[in-house]
Length: 395
Ligand SMILES: [Zn+2]
Ligand SMILES: [Zn+2]
Ligand SMILES: [Zn+2]
Ligand SMILES: [Zn+2]
Image (cartoon, rainbow, N blue to C red):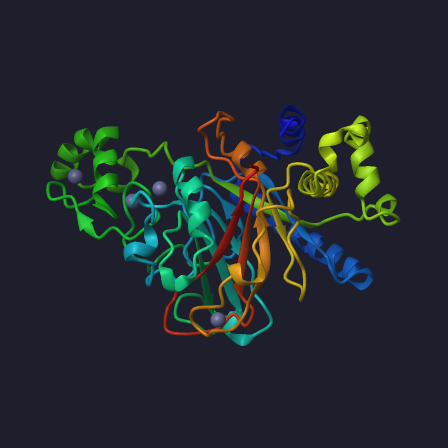
């Protein structure tokens, strides 16, 4: 990553932060933008089947409870099924045992009646040490119980369901929902604070963290005055900041059509001299250089992108490097219906910049996280079905 500074600069230019005063007005504006994006998309689809939809950070979204019908990153998830949340070992890092942190949710409904609403939720352990170990685990067959530090859940609902009105495309502001952990606001709060009986937690770890960060003080007050329960809770500053993700169609670059992007990508990256570098005669290094050049060119079309979405049959991810990609057998079949899984979207490393993750040696880093989901979006009794993530690191 020699171009980190340049990438960071591009990212800054693309941050679309609006200072929010009137939410309703903003949301109306947002809806019309979304509609514009949709119609752009329809125009494009006539020209090319392999349309990639790009997610960019749109603006800070901190002051309102997020909608399960939106694509958002950071903060806490807006569970689509607000009652039957994932539980038990699904919610913790398989390596260190800590509760997983919410990374991103992608609202991706499809034509089928059973997937009128469909949202994918991605969680990960913020520890780079765990992510490095996860590299070995992701290759394991499901029967060997891989201990993943990155987990994906698929939740879907038919148009007629018990949580949302069938004609409404907005959510009910959480009238029915499971009690969430007072610290992470992500997982079910299964154990209640014995003193105030107001705060509840998903884990001992989060209870301890909440206590240290101010609940020790508020707990005493809450036991006396329970009026200010919600508003007075100590703030969690360890979760990532929350952003709304805006979706747009990736622009085409006609210049690239002649050569698939290879030569242009290389020369635009200023690497002309490397043609004479004997290192590049190594087959793998050459493949990685080529892959990186294509990656850079595609990403440069929409700088700062955090998400690439394409669920067309046969679509493939944009790999930063050609090594450390999954073989066909590395992507396990759906563990609910036994059918194949296909590529659906990938999460880009630029998201880490928005989260304010430092660029040090031990900080969390990835080159891409690719999400594979059941091709049939199968139904079943589980509200949240685990899908598969493949994490590619740069080295
Ligand atoms: Zn971990
Ligand atoms: Zn928690
Ligand atoms: Zn308490
Ligand atoms: Zn399935």
